[in-house]
Length: 271
Image 1: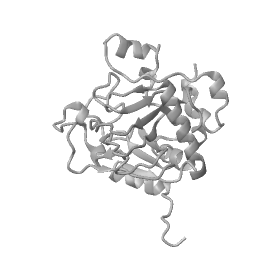
Image 2: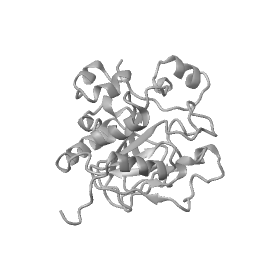
Image 3: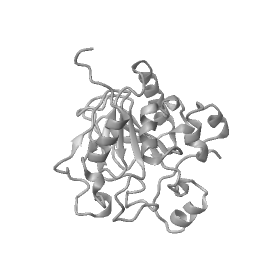
Image 4: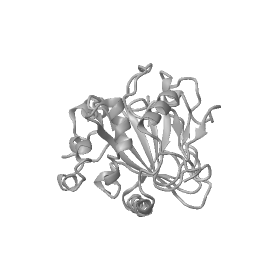
C-alpha cells in the first residue's frame, strides 16, 4: 500500500539499538488479538496485582504464573531474532511483568533496568562495561501516546557507564534535556538495551495504559538472585537486607501448556 511503513527488520532494529539504545517493532501481536489480551492482563492486575513505588501505577510481577494469554507471541521471530543476534541461541526470559499506568499517575524516576539499576541488591556495579547484557521489551497492549504515557527514554544513554539510579549527577525525578516519548500502536513492542535510561510517563487520559515488561537474557547471566529460595538470593538479598525483584515460579502444569517455541525461554523458572 502506498505510504505504508515497511516492517522493521531485525537488522534495522539492531542498528537502532546500537545507536539509540531503543526501537519500536510494530505488529507483534495481531490487531484482532490484542484487545482480548489487554483485557485479560488488566483483569489479572485488578485481581492479583500490587502498586509499584510510582503513584498510580499497578503491576503484577511474575505475570506468566497468573496469565498466559500473551505467551504465543513471546517467541516472535523478530523479537527473539533480535535477542539471539545479541546473545546467541540460548536466550531466556528473566522477567514477565504487567504495568498499568492508571489515569493521573505521576511521572516515575529515570533509571536503567536490572541488572544495571544501582538500587537493586543484585546489580552490576558502576562503572559497568559497554556491552549489551539484557534486553527490556515493553509490550504495548493499549496505544502508547504522548497523552496515555508512552515511556520516556533518553536516546544514547545506554553508552553511559552509570545511570540516575546510581547518583551519576543526573536528578532522576527531573526531565532530562534529550528525553523523548516512545509511542506506538497496540500490538507493538518497545525494545530497550536495559542500560537505556527510561521512566514512567504520566497518563493524562481517562483510560488505563496497559503494557507488559518482558526481559530477555543470555544464558550466562545469573538470574538466581531473582528466585525466591535460591542460595544466591539468600546470600545477596536476605542476609544483607537488600532490595531486589522477585519473580514467581512457573508451575509444571502451566509450563506444559506453553507453545513449544516458548518453553525454552521459561525452563529455568519451572519449580
